[in-house]
Length: 207
Image 1: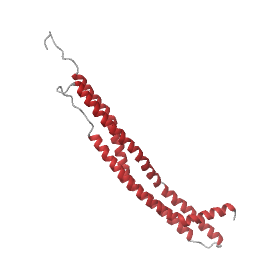
Image 2: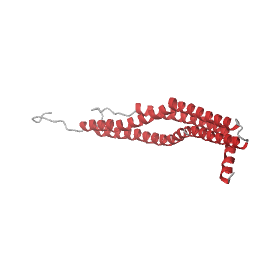
Image 3: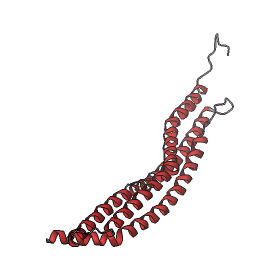
Image 4: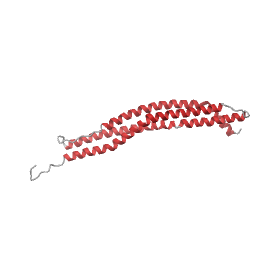
């Protein structure tokens, strides 16, 4: 047996000892990560809903001076925009963590494939060394790692599709909606305030 084959055999034996336990530990870590992401996204979703529903729209009134109305609109716009910027920054931080959760889901089937290959290599090596007598130890490792990888991948993929992904999509839609609608409403309110500043047209010197 060459040096390369010996190193490969040793690596496969280490995987035989550690890989399945590593997959289970990673699944526990992913479950904790999912709960955290779920809680934070729910909180952000509630904040975006509140922000979208409470966009300040000041209705013009001739009882309110035009300058005072413009000042009121400017203050309201600044308050809404500051809340939006703060929320968008928080979401940008949380979405990075959520993306890592999604990325780890893709690791499970890869670990299962790694265990499959390592198990088959151990089985073939045992067959060669045992004079063509079939060994089930490597096959057992290959099947167990494959099953663990696939099962955990499916579980977390379903959890993401049902719970976290819709929340993330909803938050992004609301943020886009607010940003697009914000300037339109603000411009309309300021334009209405400008109408109040126009002088009253008189005919023949009479108002």
